[in-house]
Length: 427
Image (tube, rainbow, N blue to C red; front, side):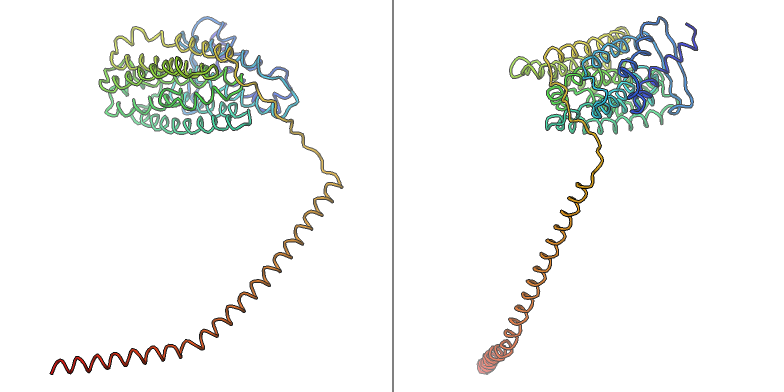
């Protein structure tokens, strides 16, 4: 296959799911969820490497298919195919069409984040993936799903704000926002520590790293089976991938910051292991396994920040670790058996008949009559109250001057007597 055809296929991996996400299109096609995965599956099986630069898209976004990206892309294809296979097929269900739209938008965002080669593209596709996954997370309309969605949305917004600030900081340092160039530029910048912590905190929130694991544990216990299958391969795996691509690992020794990151990872692993062997139930086992695995990955990131030469030697193993982690979490979520995908009632718009219109009109007329009667009664009571108050004020007003005269007479008498006493004492 020539380079041009390879580049077109690379672009179709992202563009095809976005196109199929249009409800008017995927409603008329059979198996749209499977059709959207075909370009990514073909790209995974083709050998070689290819890159594509698009200066007209998102300030110059580029795509690249390299050896590291192939691991994550193969994992994504497997997980998206499995999720599509276990989702309930119901072509003429309005709710199912909405779920398909969120499913395809999340797929396009995750695949774009895997293949993009610069910070701007990763930020845009990860944002699309995050909010699309929020739509999938709240498909089970119950209190647990809403609570998980609220937690996830709060963490997602905070993480995106921090990541956007880090993006602006990187753009201030260098005009070339490709990952390798940003690593080298930010490692020598005066704001390297600030950039490091903004990026680390944002991706820790997205991945559910302890102590930001709250949304992850709630999501695993309340999400439907297909959404729980995607939790490890979409938000968690893409956040770990983003940390590897955004952080200037392997460039210099970050000293105390690296030690703090390592310590946070060790605490996360110990906390998750303690939960697994003490109070973790079967439904929460995938969540605590994810917390332990992400903590272990954070320890590796801290080691790379502290020992650049060590990270340069073993950097390649980070990508198979992310892919294997996503596969294991998806398998564990499927075996544990999360909440089944809720079958919501079909929303079918119906034409209102004459009887219904007449009934609604009669109810509105009765409501208006009751409102007018209550308003008249309220006005009558208010008028009576004002008359009674005015009469009481008049009675009090007639008696008040006489009382005042009597009181002032007594006071004047006392003052006169006091003056006479003072004059007598002064003599």
